[in-house]
Image (cartoon, rainbow, N blue to C red; front, side, top):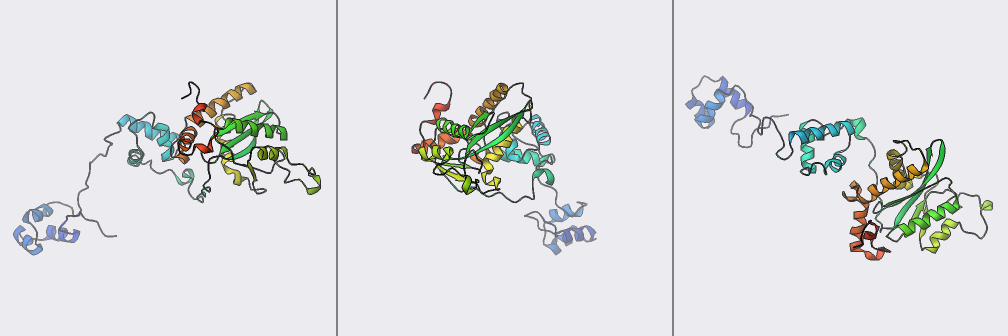
Amino acid sequence: MGSIHHANAKTTARVRKEIQDSSETIAELSERFSLNPKTVRYWKHAGRVTDKKSGPKQPRSTVLTPVQEQVICEFRRQTRFSLDDVFISLKAQIPALTRSNLHRCLKRHGLNRLPVEEAGTGKKPSKKFREYEIGYVHIDITEIRINKEKLYLFVGIDRVCKYVYVELHQRMTQEIARGFLENFIADCPFKIHTVLTDNGAQFTYALLAEHLRPKGKNHMFDQTCARHGIKHKLTKFRHPWTNGQVEIMNKKIKAHTTKKYHYESIESLKAHLMAYLLAYNFQRPLKGLKYMSPYDKMIEIYEDKAELFRFDPAQKIVGLNR
């Protein structure tokens, strides 16, 4: 690979070397190479044939302080977060932080790339969901254990705004699944038009053999959907990733609750779940929503398409209504 010279350079490495090795006078060399005598004199005594590096000798940020850069680098080392997640996490603590100066800071300190095994490279890029209006929700049930007691967490999440609703029960029956859907519908400011579930017996008779299905009777979950004008869709059998959004949310909830903390009682777990959901739905910026919270996304959609809502999402905020 050839050397890259300064954009205004009149000489090459070969010419510079020839000038240094020549016994001719400055005037003679200047005439032979059609160069300014000052240029010839400079390269005659330069002791090198390459250009000097441009820019500061010790690069530093003009916006971030050295202490802030140390905080950013240590946070990156300890958490191994991606650049976007680091930006979201530290933006409130470092107001001057932008995505570009964050990247430059990490690059200066050799932290702009995570190791391959930790950066998650080599995986197939995930496909984007088809565009839907708000109100397409995913529902699933996940098991939780506390003090050797088995509980069931019913989780629902909207595909568009990522708004989450959960309930904790000691059993998972058709009646509880129907009640969960009724409560979810009542809680959501937006109109639910589609529900996606797996093929569990709490949601459908689809996996039952034909002779075992109740004759002339629809599943009570389907009855609730029909009564509210909701389309009930099922995932492909043994393809849980079809319901991936709620599966990922299940893991997130567990990672921030039962996988991390010990609970003395079910009530303490419920209180923590409520606190987590309030923070998630109303305060946490999500990369998939362009760094908006689910609540902010609902407000944005409501201002543009109020007909998709049953009531103003602002009523979900505790305090005086606007």
